[in-house]
Image 1 (cartoon, rainbow, N blue to C red):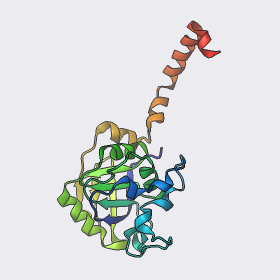
Image 2 (cartoon, rainbow, N blue to C red; image 1 turned 30 degrees about the vertical axis):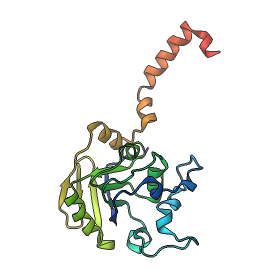
Image 3 (cartoon, rainbow, N blue to C red; image 1 turned 90 degrees about the vertical axis):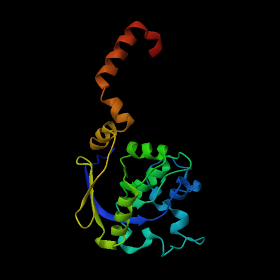
Image 4 (tube, rainbow, N blue to C red; image 1 turned 30 degrees about the horizontal axis):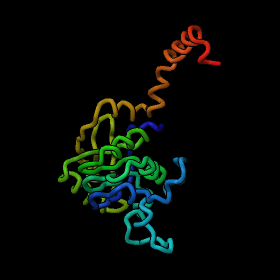
Length: 203
């Protein structure tokens, strides 16, 4: 998993509450277990019309935000089903940080396991950042995970809280497999002992 340290990029404003995972990545894109290629389906039903033509009014179709790295959204982002394809789609599109007043628990935890930083801030701060994000190509934010700050275009820093363990994992690029592999020598030692005492398990 890619490490998350400091991220600087354009922030896209999505001033909507209760954005569920079906809106993030509709069900027709769930037939794959590959993490790549899902960016094309991100917010598909809002980005495109029934004929597959881009909706010019949707934020990610507007020129300043086509390569947004940060998303500023409303309350309860990522609610609905627990599909891990939702953070996969965000990541494949290029978004590595979502800022909102609250997140659905499963989506929130899935973000950390996939290299995305979900930042929870008070609603008043999110709305200030939302307004700043509406500046288009000038809406450059810097998110510093080590310092636990978000800086908007005016340079003002807003501090956010984060679980220390989740922070450690993101800073070091550790997903569940990476965490397990840190104990590789202990696992090998256990297997060697088990192979000697219970050889039939390895036949």
